[in-house]
Image (cartoon, rainbow, N blue to C red; front, side, top):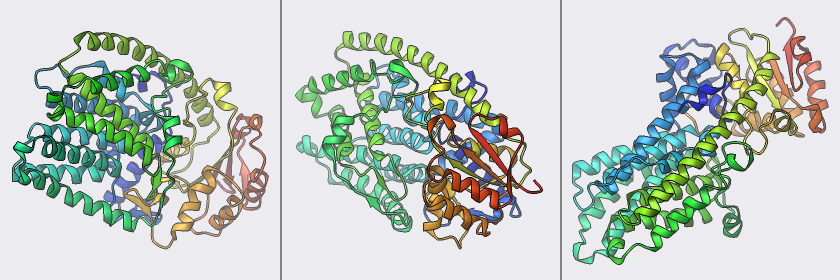
Length: 509
């Protein structure tokens, strides 16, 4: 929990966008005449991704934007620790729920990429699964109502978290039905099925109204070859990727499942083992993108390790294995935290250089950001191999600080978040608004001219990220600069000295 506070400039890849959206949401709710009201509004249809927005607004009541994401990550880790521990205690009431395996599964690429909504939703899913485990075979109508409300809540935090919750609950309910024929109670299965209906209906409404298709590409062989998709990559180097840690934990999970007795397979522990197996099967076949979201496979890879850690931590057998695993995980996780802190310190210096190139922007300014190739920067600053870009959305952090409008932030145009762009802008242009500036190409020049024509108001500042040492000044880069000059945008004196950030200001700004 201390790691985010170990560096002066802390960013995950997407985290600052969550902070920006939380600031926008608060202003829209409490100030109808906010500077954001001309561009944004709340989405009125069923939409998930509320978790970080609500939690951040609670955090912003006590701290400023500068510390908001630091506190968010620490709070998220604390929530995760107790949620996993609750699930372990539910499965094994006599066992200690405190284990470094929990710390291991929480310290991963998803967290450091800033997938806070999914992270929080999955933790809430474990609480619901633990709640059901404690009532297996004794579910009542009031209990089913609590379960149903919880699933709706998980959906409102994140759709994929709700999918993991329903996967676990479905397996738990039907496993008992299948392996214990002498105790089959249709009412118990029916109560669980009924509890899922409201969340399923909301998910269907969201899928229909998202306006985005599923990109289905079945490639289980490739998924198997790339498992677990660098999910435990938190820092540079071998220790940062936890290559010496996650295979050992996976082997322990496989060993415990293989050594379950026939009597254990007929208990809830057998159902959790099936949830591990089912998570792996879903990982192999699930589409990686759909309904505007992405990275589906890595989420089910994490579910496998979560269910597996709960199973290993709750098994009463193999005390020697659990002791050795505890020591091994503790040592290598501690080493990983040192590596993660070091990498954070390195890219904190890069963020400092980014911010040094920016003049203070007046409140309400309209900002765009074009992110060209910066492949050399991670090597120069010492944070290569992360499989994420901590500099990608620093512009949204700046916009949140100055209460400015970041027109190229990915969340509002993506239409799967609570705050969306106001009506009048078709979905194709909304996609271009962030795609064409996040990975500039031949359409960027056209989108820039469209923005200049006043689709969302005049642009006041343009932040161009381009590393001259990476060959990133090819392609559409010269055309983008020429267009900015034609629009009357001038390079600011402060950014002339920056190694990779150029800021263009409209005349008079």
